Figure 1 (cartoon, chains in turn brown, orange):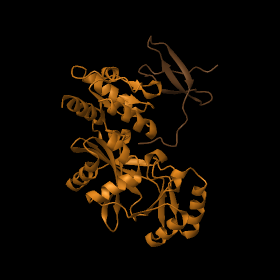
Figure 2 (spheres, rainbow over the protein chains, first blue to last red):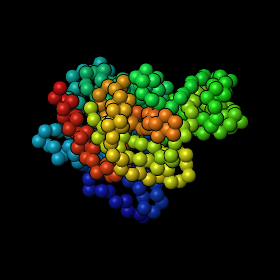
Figure 3 (tube, chains in turn yellow, orange):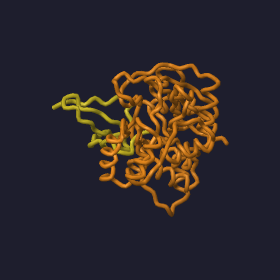
Figure 4 (tube, rainbow over the protein chains, first blue to last red):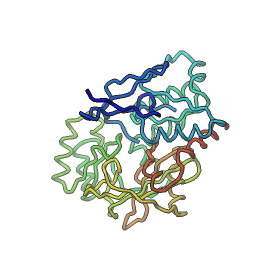
Length: 49
Length: 283
């Protein structure tokens, strides 16, 4: 099983990537500070600047 | 700060706020977790503080979240009017033309036939852009009328937004454009964005490289003039160096990315943004 590194300064919603398969996940940090990952949003047609 | 995508920019703004912790308390909100009761008033202001920096990458999320916050009395940077107008290339172009800002020749049409007539007047090659969208997505280079017919026929099968044909001259220019960042009343940094991939588009989201650019008075004046119709705020102004007409503003971005500008210019843009917010909160 691959290990996904979470940066020390990671914030809620940050994208992390599996080093084995390249899949992107979104970091979910609870109010208690517990970190979990969930499927990341795909790039939307309206994303930009 | 409200956001949906954590980029280098958002993390740099958080760091800049930490350095100014004696003057600012930054709260961060992932917009994907937010929901609102439109009948509530006090809780929204209490939660979000004096001023909200809008950093959502999704245009529709950005626009509608700004509408809620501003509608409930919270100051948002940039504000709803700015998000609404700059988020739509037609509205933005009309504002630039009205302000007398030099900008590429642009035509608008609403049917296939009218678009082809407009293109005949504009001349080929020309560029078709969606009125809403970014990062060069679905921007098409129309080299001749056959290419135009093919692309427009495809667009006719798409969502009605893509039946609004925003057509622009393909400006003769070097294979680069300029991105300048405006914070408040100053153009704080600028870079050349140079295409190195053979792509005719110069959006750094599509690859390419960037170089620092010294801000001349002409560039500063033009960037401030281009951002003026949208109100005081934080903008990314895109310009082209036309062989015929000199500097032309082709876009003003409302939730600007600035990591390349920051890296090439060495200017502390996130620090300037936080200082601007502190000033906005005080006024």
